[in-house]
Image 1: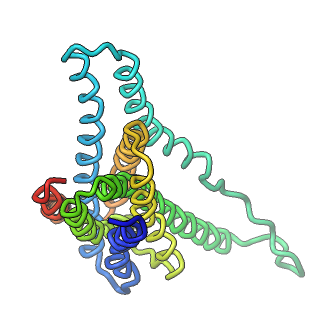
Image 2 (image 1 turned 180 degrees about the vertical axis):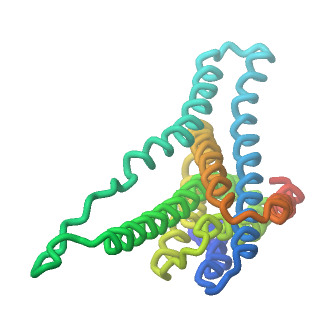
Length: 288
């Protein structure tokens, strides 16, 4: 398959993520609907977590099996193991530290100038505090949603590598099945991005950026995989994605507890996980 065609089909597989993102613009969603959407996204992310770490562990296990078969490349096996552990740590603890550093600090509002109202009344202070808290919550929800997009993007870059490698090897049937399977799979990942937003209604610009960050790496990965084959690069993205996804799952779960509807949420987690499994089976069926 030519490079140009591989890149175009890789872009098609990645940008199906935009099919589910517009749901985030819907108004008047009930608390039950918000919990259902958020926990469905947790289920999708849980499947992605299992998927990326199984692929990453498979690369490391391959190096260990080579040693068992009589190889002497201990450095490669140890290096890949450290890369997996380090990437996962960067995705979890690193994201937590970054979020703490970037978290806006509350600042005291200056008094209102002029006349007899130089100082804010108790009521004005309370209203201002509520406004600040609501704005901080809104920014935090949007930041978590964008973090999900970045984590999914790392995962999709590794998927794009698989498309590019199979296309370069001339396995057109496998490349085609991978593209179709990843396209179906990525269409559900948009729910993972908008799920953490709760009652925050994102702008179209925000959705476009989130889709580009989440789906674009499939296109980039297809081009890189067509040109370069690197197991350490693939492992690094799997490890980072796994750590980031785990961090995001914890954030969403914590944020949704205030809405209640526990049983519904658990059912939707199962539904999201099942959706991830079913769409991935298309790839497995084709030998990916």
